[in-house]
Image (cartoon, rainbow, N blue to C red; front, side, top):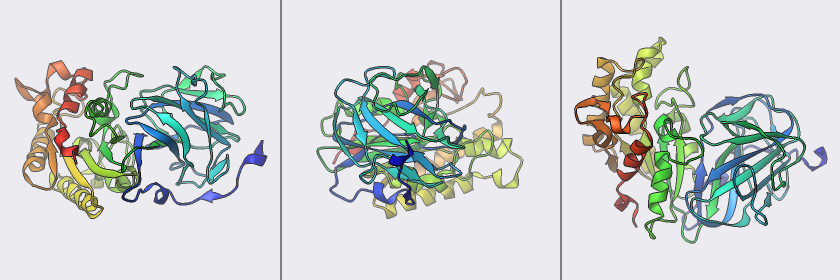
Length: 400
């Protein structure tokens, strides 16, 4: 089985993904790698994603960001999902990497597949299957998927119409992007956020995170229906500092190019982060974690400058209240949240401000979420709250 495996290492992680003006590629689905995952035996795994927009050709990106050694993928397939782990008849497509069915990805890097012809509808579930011909010591995952991953099928089952295993997990493995070729110049909105973009508080398998709802809104506007949504939310993520329990993933400053600016066709970035910087300053003991509002603002200024240097518009969302949380809220944290929100609204740093706070706070107590929108933990919205968040994005900002 190893004869099909190429030994060429793909060393560049982002250059191939960056679209030039006039190209029709855009991100139809994305999930930012955020942590090192478990050791995996040789197996086939299958994952289902939902596209945000339509296209006639498809390609995928695989990530070995947290791997400690080269990752070999012996085969990869994509097809239309027929529910659960099944693939719709006639839709299965084998993927190639540089013309070969297998690829070896250097530790810390990624690989973009060659495109294949496959008509994909907007809001279309796709099944992506990966064959690992050898054990993987450290996998690369997105920990909070809200979608079932199907694991441990023996041998190369990437082309199987029905997946020959019932083992499941709730993380994303290796798959970071699905890109489609659309009918016009590629346009992508990248949403860089934390657990609220990641959908904590929403149900699994329902695609009801607020970026999912926003993608559905765009389909009602013919002029906007070909815009792709790249959801780069990472639960526990921060702007200034990398992972430190309970905070997850590289800082936004470290991942901004890879997870936003380098996405094909990116025209806009919506930044909705900062609450974990505020809470981490109080929960963590290390001096580097004791960040101030002024330092968070400086980080946001830097992100805005980097976006504009690439010709990308950048918006910011105000931070939601989290009063009532037993671990995170304090009067000092609330003062910092209010100060940061006031700065976001008035500093003129961003091309637009999306005022999530004003829409979801409790009218009777502005330090808390409106009970109608509270998932129950007083930090994350429920699905009704996520629908309200999606409605706050003024679609005129996306019109030509």
